[in-house]
Length: 145
Image (tube, rainbow, N blue to C red; front, side, top):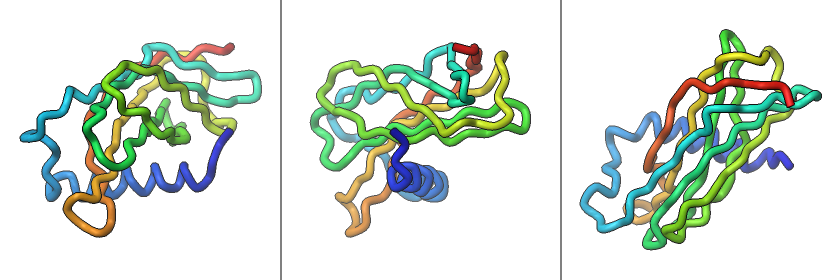
């Protein structure tokens, strides 16, 4: 189920991350397990036009604060920001699957997919700042299904 507030939070986090990435250092010096995210090489377009992307992620149990999964897809002029999900950070590999509202303009074939693992870090300020832990950007094949 699409949650408008969560989608707005993910979009705001991605924008803020893009603006602050150079200013906010990541956790390079911390002793966390590697944070990883992948996007599957195949996506799906449902009969109603809903776009589905999926993949895997892993994040450290030592993190404090929420970690979010955000994704998007582009194909020609079509673009979809996919509803975000809250990650479970327990040092294990998990699968993620996200869907859009019916996405206009997507057709079976090649598209570009991006997934991001975003930590909302409140350790340096009162307002949590988004820190991109890892991303995966790749060609995705969209299929009807």
